[in-house]
Amino acid sequence: MSEQELEQKFNERIDRGEVIEAKDWMPERYRTQLIRMMSQHAHSEVVGMLPEGNWITRAPSLKRKAVLLAKVQDEAGHGLYIYSGTETLNISREEMLGAFLTGKAKYSSIFNYPTLTWADMGSIGWLVDGAAIVNQTALAKCSYGPYARAMVRICKEENFHHKQGYEILATLMKGTKEQREMAQESVNRFWWPALMMFGPHDAESPHSSDLLRWKVKLHSNDTLRQRFIDRTVPQAENIGITLPDPKLKFNPETKHYEHGDINWEEFYNVINGRGICNKERMKARRDAHVNGNWVREAAEAYAQKRNKLKAA
Ligand code: ACO
Image 1 (cartoon, protein in one colour):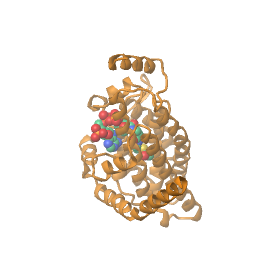
Image 2: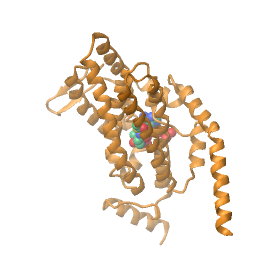
Image 3: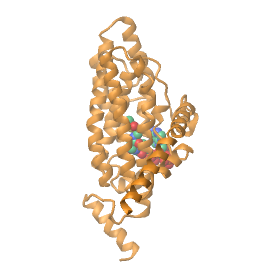
Image 4: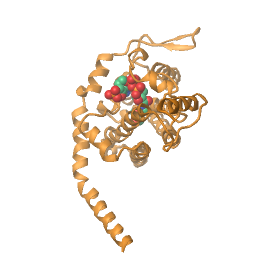
C-alpha cells in the first residue's frame, strides 16, 4: 500500500473509534505529536513531586504525612507508566530525559508555583489534581491504546488525591480564623494557575486541530477548562471558600459559569522558563539525574553480567 492509502486506512480506523496500538501503522506526525504530549505529561508528573515533597517533613500529623507520602509516590508511578507508554512509540527514556533536562521539552506550568503553606497541599489536591482528572478522564478514551490504558489507573489515583486535598481544605475551613484565612489565601494563589493548566484558548492552541482530528484529544482546551470550572464552583461554595474571580457568575441559559479573563502573559512567561520556580525545579531534576548516575551504571553493569551468564 502507498503511504497515502495507509494514511487513509488509518483515518478510517480513527473515524470508527478504533484504538491504535504500538505495532500498528501510524502517520509519522501522529507518532511525534504523541511523543511530545506524552513525554511532557510524564515530565510533569515527576516535576509535580517537588512542590508537595517540600511538605512531607512538615505535615501537621502522622496521618497527613502518610497520605502525602503515598500521593507523592503515586506521582512517581504515574511518570513511570507514561514514560513506558511513550517508549512504545520508538523513543528511548534517555532521549526523553535529554529533551527535558536541556529545556527542549516542557512540563506543566502549574509546578512552577511555590508551596508556601500547608493549605497549599489542599489546593494542589483539590484544584491541580481536580484539573488533571478532568483532562485525563478524557485521555483515558484517547485513540492511542498504551496512553489510554495508563490513564485508567492514573485517574483512579488522582481521584484519591483530589478527595484528600478537598478534605484538607474542608478541615481548615472548619478550624480557627487563621486556618480559614490560610485556606482562602492558598486558593487565591492556585485558582488562576489551575485554569492555565488546560493550555491556551482554542484559537491560540497550535496542536489542537491535529490532536482532535486523531482523537488524541477528545475535547478542546476551553471545553475542559469550562467543565472544571462548572464542577469546582459548587465545591468551593460547599466549604465556604471564595474563588478569586469577581466575574464568576452562573448563566442559567448556557448552564455554565462565566469567568473573568485569564492572564495569558503570565502563562507564557511560566511556560517559557520565567515562572517563580522554573529555575529551582530544573535544578532539582538535573541534580537528581546526576546523583542517580551510579544507579544507572550499576543497573547497566548488572544487565551486562546477566547477559554474559545467559550466553555462557
Ligand atoms: N503547561 C506547560 N505548557 C503548556 C501548557 C501548560 N499548562 N498548556 C499548553 N502548553 C504548551 C504546549 O505543550 C505547547 O508547547 P510545545 O509546542 O512546546 O509542546 C504550547 O503550549 C501550545 O499549546 P497547545 O497547542 O494547546 O498544546 P496541546 O494541544 O498539547 O495541549 C495540553 C496542551 C492540554 C496540556 C495537552 O498537551 C494535554 O492534555 N497533555 C496531557 C496532560 C498533561 O500533560 N498534564 C500535565 C499536568 S497534570 C499532572 O501532572 C498532575
